[in-house]
Length: 406
Image 1 (cartoon, rainbow, N blue to C red):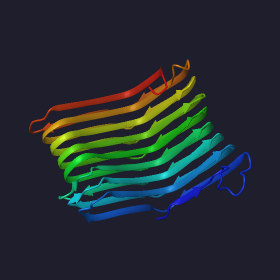
Image 2 (image 1 turned 180 degrees about the vertical axis):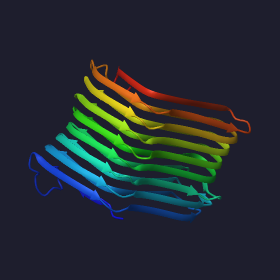
Image 3 (image 1 turned 90 degrees about the horizontal axis):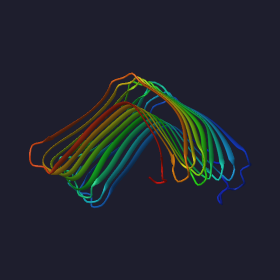
Image 4 (image 1 turned 60 degrees about the vertical axis):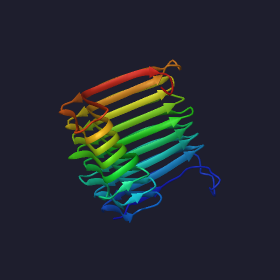
């Protein structure tokens, strides 16, 4: 039950004892062979101020950055056993302050930064047939969350996150997950006279690169998900809630690329064989505003450049069943919002219109699986408004040119 963690830095800062030589090279290999478990349990009554909890379990972690220089970062991360994070909050009586809780379970995690620098990245991440599970529970039959609550549960098998300013970011990312990935979030309470939001997120493979201030990107991303299921499940329940929201988001493969100040060129290749399920249940006998949202996607790519040029070559194949279900049940109240979205393959590309932006896109999408989105609303008393929508799509492609910030 030990997390393997490595940190690297190639930066010239005031705290550095010496100047990092130009053209730095970091080679990282991590293999995690034991279970990684993190647990947090609170059992309290009548807390006068805030309740804040952070709970995380990571298999392999690599963090690196470069400033005013260049860095070539090669990394191979492999996870062979389970990763689990569990949070249980029993909050009796009146909790006067805000309840804030974040629970995270991650298999392989790589974070890198480039600031007025060049970053070349070669990252390989692999997760075997294991369990990646994040679970959060907030409950007590007398729980009165006076200050409201923000509770998040996230389980992600592989993650690559890169940020840059005035940077050139280039390289190859290859992610493979055979894991069962589950994120659960449960609330049971008596009274919430404030805003409360409970969310769950489950992803097999995730890549996010965000660069601005005269940056550019040239990346190849390959993602494969073949586990049994990727599941996000949220259940938020209260006797009386003024503004209660439950949200669940599940995705097998996700790539988000954003750039400003230069070109963005990307080649993305995604394949999914896992079932993807997102489910949200919200209940409140008396309610002001109640929101239940669920979103499930097999493969998703978003590539946006707030500058002149976007080149995207995208290939997506989804063979896994996709289900998104959102439900609300209440008696007397005001407004209920319920939405479910399910898709096999999604790609979005955009460039800047005020920069005379150009998009060069090649897109191939294939979906072979059933895609289902369902909503359910039940009220037994008077209510002011009920707004519900369900959208199921096999393949979706959107490309547009717009103003920065729009």
